[in-house]
Each structure stands twice: as C-alpha cells, then as structure tokens.
Image (cartoon, rainbow, N blue to C red):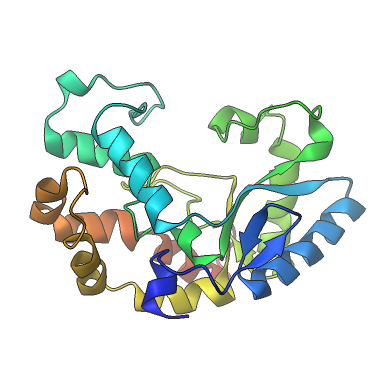
Length: 238
C-alpha cells in the first residue's frame, strides 16, 4: 500500500466482493471465509458499505459542513447548525464521519456488516445502535462476532470503534481487517494527511480543522489504534 491508496485517491488495488462492493484482495478472501463460518452458525453475513473514495468522503464532509446533510450529537439526535460554533460543528461531524483522506474505508480493509437472514429483502440497513444493541435485529450476529473476535477466530477482523474514547462514536457494525489496516495506519501520519488536505481548494471548514489539527488527529484519527492494541494483546472484547 502507498499513501495515495491509503488516502482514497487510488483504487486500482481493489478486488470485487459480492458484485458491487470492493475491498483489498486479502480482505475479500478473509471476509468470504468469515461468511462461511457465519453461515454455519445460522447467519447470512453481508457487507453494506466497503470502499469509499477520497472524493466521496469529501462530498459527505462538505454536505455536513454546510448543513445540507444531518449532523448528529453524541446521543444521535440532529443538531441545529445555528446553535453551534464552527469548532463545535467540526467535532460533531467527526463524531460520525471521518475527514476525507482519513476514513478507514479508503483502505479496502474496513466494512460495515449486517445479517441478511434477520430481515426481509427490502429492509433498509440504517447502521444505528438500535439495530446492533440488545434487542436489535442484528444483535445476535454481533454477539457471535464478539465471540469469534475474542477467540481469535474472526479471520483477522476486529472492531476499531468498539468503545467511546471521546472521539469517534462506537460503531458495532464496523469491522476492520487488522493485517491490512496495520500497514495503512503506519502511512497515515499527521504531516502527510495535513499536506493532502491543505491542498484541497473546496474543503469546507479547513481553517478550523487546521487550527485544531493536533487534537483532531489524536482524537479522531489515531483513536482506533487503542482498540487494535487491545486485540493484539488478547485483552478480550475490542
């Protein structure tokens, strides 16, 4: 992997998963093995979101920055732009959406998953806590995945957003393939990402991001590393 690939600017390295989704070739193979294990346990493990390009992530960021797309508070409720200053607004966006260039979905190592066997064919997956928490339609799948991760039987997948560290909101539906993700994380340095973003002429709220750069990088870019460290140390659920 190189920096252009890690920041979502080059997608030539990807392979196809199940028709329309794309992932790193190693991750496609690992996820297909995990799907077989899940099927044996009675689940139909599927991806709902995989690779995302820099341009797509930038469009999401700009729409939220301009208030054209909903931005949520810590409880998942829609915020009023007029009640937030620019720095509060940036932090609220980052709670649920990565900076362009910093999304783990750029790497082809990360994906959002659900259990197709638990819902009807026309069900629209929302990727919200109610779906994956106790009593949620996909809770049983994620309980099973927890067991696989704890037992180091999840084909290298772990949850980078398993808990709230004061930055990115917990996302139980988000899986990351550690062997590929590790190499990407080493390339995504603060200086490299800053240099890429400062060159973007249409990056909304860039002056605010630049002013608070070190805090943003520590809280919202590096935070998942602590989850991976726990996985490597075998400290249980991550």
